[in-house]
Length: 219
Image 1: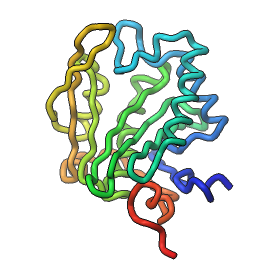
Image 2: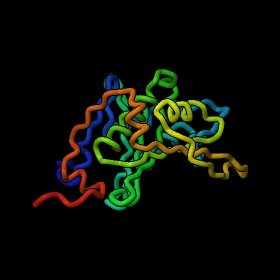
Image 3: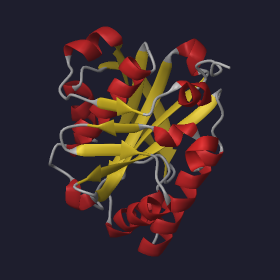
Image 4: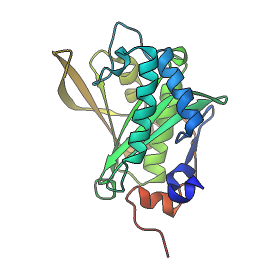
């Protein structure tokens, strides 16, 4: 089975309305469909890499290729978990968690997007809450990091709602223009104080933890 070789595929995160999991091939097709249908309004580009400017078919293809590359390229020292977000059996977006040297640093970065039809329903907060529980409760993280372009109020609002504090700024170049990227940081204490959703974590066994840099499985 796939999970014999990639134990992280056993991981499931469940909230009141959502399930987060690593995508199988059918999930990838569904996620590509959401990308093709649209991810954001045309008046604001929320991504450092403006991948959503492509035609619908190309957006979908790039989504599949990016997800597969992220999973295939993961190592215990540098990993990515690009979870699909599922509501009532339908893939509605993705919630990624990435980390380098997690076993030492104990911090990871999150990023996400939702199909445009699923905006404004609280899913962004709920799916971020799911991966925060995974990081702090499941993996013993000390910090969670995020970032959002200045003006991306929905993303910044999720960060504030879940207890993140401002953590400085970066400058990115997009379409030959400078954009202000706001960094956000959440520590364990503030996560516990701002928990908004109950999250069930399944499949995070010793083999999965080993793939995430948390020690070798017991012999």
